[in-house]
Image 1 (cartoon, one colour):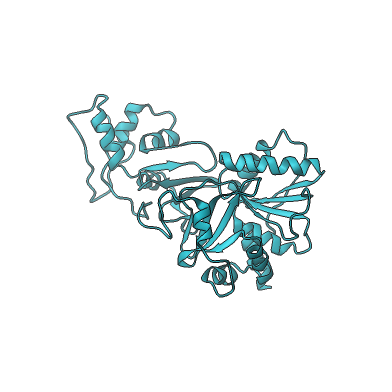
Image 2 (cartoon, rainbow, N blue to C red):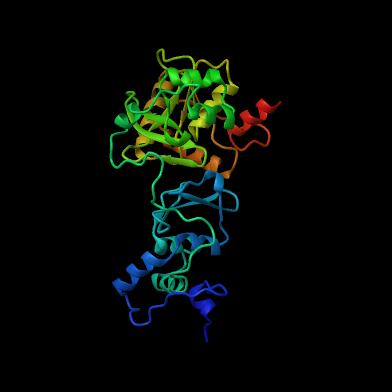
Length: 337
């Protein structure tokens, strides 16, 4: 006779009770909806051996890691998820099938019945109030309402003190209007398309990281030497702070545009990157893929290469030196010497 562990895959933990529906089991839309509303995606990952990455998580998006290069993000009040290293996303049903492709829909329902209503032990992604939360307002309007980045702002203090970015880099970024001082001590980083239009905003500060609603990611851009003609060198990082950190570590490279994708390659980012690299190739320049020094960074680098594969351009892969995971960590280590 099959045990409850064999049937569900997840035996209830000691002292926990699960919600089980006995009357509606056969393709019951009501039960499916109930499971979607009562099953915690975070709990599924906990029981599969995944762990929260606090440094890379926010209130609305909790990052989980397992092993080398495995990353999943839990969102939508703990009822949704997505894979930043691929295209997969969905609810608790698709999460089980992503983790266990061999399980059919019936087996997935059995698994979910056993854990419905059980709370995870770790943090949960919520849709509560977040810094500067405004519904569907143009990114440009929100950007223009914020003060410029100055030494007297909390955002400057965060970037200089916590992230060890030098004043020369911050002053240059402020002059190019690619960073502004957001609320709650956050720095706002502008995403702009190839024509220079602001398309989206990433906010980063003490205890918060996210992309503001109402916009679309394209590329964060920082040009220490100013913008004159076609670029001769473009360095692509994962985060704006890494782009600024790499620029600080290369003070003589005034021929470089430092850009950041802010996570995965969405349609706006793919378009902006392809246009920029197209100009770079026409000028005989070099694309430096400077993603993080881990399996996830290598995967992201491979996706960038695949995205611009049809463009004739010289490509270099640059990894943070030593044991540093990313360029900001490399800058922090260099600043301590």
